[in-house]
Amino acid sequence: MLTLRRKEDFGEAFRTTVSHTKMHKTLQVPAPGSLGPVTPEEARLLEKLDLTRLPRHVAVIMDGNGRWAQKRHLPRIAGHRSGTQSARTTIETCARLKIEALTLYAFSVENWRRPKAEIDFLMQLLREYLRKEMPLIQKNEIRMRFLGRIDELPPGVQKDVREAMEKTAGNQGMVLCVALNYGGRAEIVDAMNAILEERNGHGPAERISEEQLARYLYTEGLPDPDLLIRTSGEMRVSNFLLWQIAYAEIFVTETLWPDFNRARLLEALLEFQKRERRYGGIREGEAVLEKPARAASH
Ligand code: FPP
View 1 (tube, protein in one colour):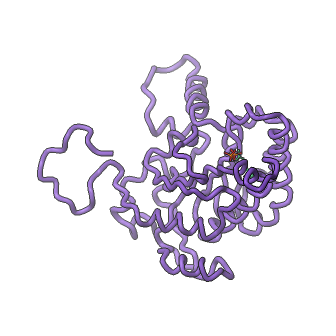
View 2: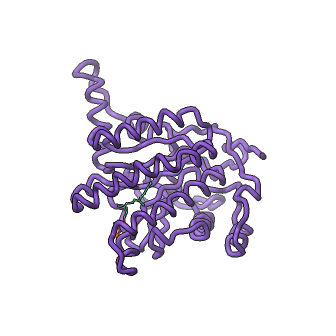
View 3: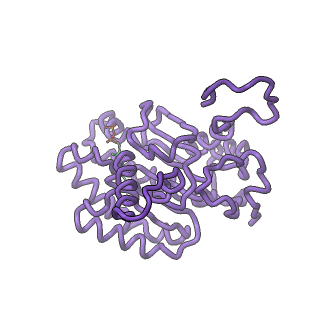
């Protein structure tokens, strides 16, 4: 496998990666055949994809399971069950493409408002998923993390979550984060409280820096997502990774989550590669002729 040093090889393009991320991590570039057999459609998309310029971290809001089921006159839970297949495909494809981190939004702090039967089903589905998919996770060297208020989950789920993290802790491949009982605002509040607790009223009342806050987020040590995918067409971020998606490219597709297959994922990656990322700066090579306007860049 070909390996590149990210900072040196991509130079300016990665210049503004948020400073708390690990700038010198070796970038692994997948071999062209790493996805195994592909359909003609996938092959056409793969041909256009630059395997040396993939996002480091992909985050996904998996939406539309209910609508998928409704369209087929099925109960909502059938949509969730079918959604696990899309999760499987996305996880395996990202791991094989050597993407560093993938975060899937599985259950939000707001999802407790759903009917109890649906919540119970989702929790069971996750437990079943962890049990069934562990061989695939291990085979692909995936390290699992869970983002959210895990200690508020039912005891059985907490146990499975801890076991999944322990079993995969030594893996060296992609980090798979499952956001579970997750809320972006809750995460920032948790980080602030952890900092306050650590200070415990002692020491100088120093200001909190962005870097320090980031170290207390659930995603500590991971690069911020470069690409946020949302399925089923809603133009919202739904309290997902509010801090971390500050500069993420957002890709919204009308495809409902259970229909999100490998070709749709490759399309999202291709769209990402078409975007020009400026992090609030200006295009590379563009001369600064005038004084920049105050806070004009987004
Ligand atoms: C949103 O669809 C989806 C969820 C709240 C649950 C996502 C969970 C899975 C895909 C199951 C497995 C996941 C993993 C990681 C194993 P929705 O119900 O809000 O759909 P709707 O907007 O059409 O009603």
